[in-house]
Length: 342
Ligand code: NAD
Ligand code: ZN
Image: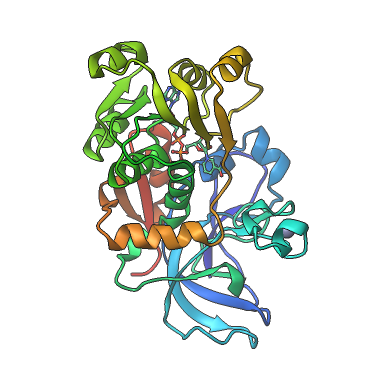
């Protein structure tokens, strides 16, 4: 089969011929229909420090996908050939304390699809049945194809109550944009989104932001004044990984404010802890999706009318992957989808 492979320890990806994965007794082989490019895939392409330390070469990359069941191991009973499925990209150990307690998103030994084991940018992917999301077939395939990052957005946005609350989202990447739509759908009052990229800020505005602030052109203090917000934001969703954005967030939270942190900082981050202590802020780290509460929530959100279609800005054939990665790296894109059938 064809696959996008990190074949050599240097920048780039290579379209290569690799064997179809073998199906173990607890596994499901999935014919991949659509995939989406994630920031992680860009890091792997660029071969940054993290990728160099993490990715064994050669590796089939990619983890955002939707497809149809093509084959099953002998222990798999509740699926049929042709069923539409997506997949949870975190493969947990099943044996640690958290796994045994059913808190699988807190597993201490998580393996990543397309990071530590063969991924989804391929004609077929094989994962354990416990990682297969048996999708509602009335949901559009391309939306199911972005359930992984949609799950990051859902997990973060709904980490704290937001009904009627004022929400600050720093970073209007694809996840920040989806978080905006979720927060709007879930009944937040003001949603202020910050970024430096106007293309993405325009998308955030379209998805329900009250104000989409270009931090090169204005400050959160000005926005708060304009909105008549005297006491700061109730909930902060950090989705940029940028230290300046986080500092701005800390400085603009209300006393007792809650922050959910998804963005991955590239290094150490200096924080004014006095703001955290005297303002009694709560900061919660978010990794991946809850297995599988987040997946149920995502499916429900789509079924009750959340429309994420505008976040998908580019659709290409997988053989055009170089263009897909180029577009992603310009930043002037939401989600970029690759088609694997037709
Ligand atoms: P992305 O890189 O596409 O988006 C980040 C956005 O932040 C960009 O649009 C960038 O312009 C913006 N930004 C940079 N500096 C800023 C500043 N000073 N103020 C405001 N915005 C600024 O990433 P994404 O795919 O949307 O993901 C969001 C973040 O979540 C990334 O940091 C990513 O690494 C991280 N992530 C974490 C998990 C997890 O499980 N914790 C999973 C997926 C992604
Ligand atoms: Zn575990």
